[in-house]
Image (cartoon, rainbow, N blue to C red; front, side, top):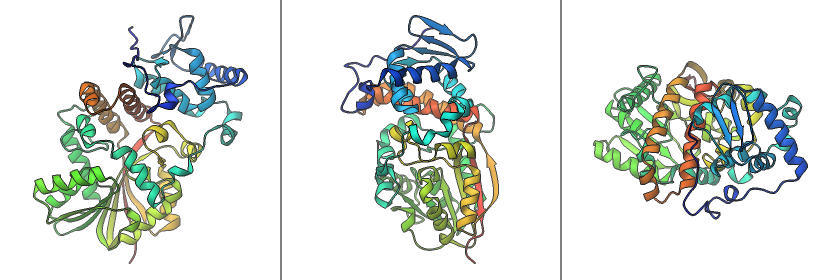
Length: 416
């Protein structure tokens, strides 16, 4: 088996990637403790592990190759799972089957760290920075860091619908050719969930690049869509104009907490993950107050098991540091309990599509890999490409392992 080695031209840019370019300092005792804990975990997993040129163990499962063991231990000792991800970006460990390795880790996430240390998580795990709180100004900054990277970047690996959320395929194994239709199937099911028909007044929280708004307008609905991404807002408006729906669709650069009015249907696709637990009550309160009597809400939400959500809440993760600052994936229980505690909304329908998200991510990741030269042309360096590949593989592994799921939910109730 050939292991791919990460050797970016000119090395890693320390200005852009300071915590990747430099291995953190660490006391020998702390490093030794981290090494013992990680080795204990790895030896119990269905993985084959190679440490440098010396040690190898495990007889089944995908191969994890640690090319620089000392740096690997130090990063994990200092940064935990963030350090584990940064070690990959630095090329200190490799895996030909990256999704497979990350999937094994995801399936055993609850037992990787010994129970006594799990109970002391608050003492050793890094906390989310206050700067990433989703205040009115903080939310805009968090969205900007991801969604305003470049419309051209996202267009390189998304299909022609520019849908950046899970598709729903007809068969378990999807293809690139089927992806646009699968994205429309996802959108249509959401619009059906909240009863969008001719003349419906629709609010979309989280515009994306406008495909849902265009599809709702094609049904005869009047759509108000809000986003915090300036890049998405501009392109979505262009796409609405090109589709001939300027008279039916209004896209506004606006926080959901600042929207007023009443709507027959409220739709929000994979946006609750960016809200943050602190603001979930405000999010559901907004859904309730914006819903007209008899109206319905349709949400598409990535979810995780409730116990894992509780364990990670408040913890600063690799995904938050490098991809989605300020986010937290909820559990279904958290959605139901928050809605019930703060509003009259209740979940009245729910269906999961986790396997479909794994396929969606596989197709995006394959497409992104094919576009490496064009990513470089947009000004993103080799470390960024490696980071983005890790993010897509990490996400796919989460869905394939069952650690993550995605649900379409209908909420009913609201003001009378």
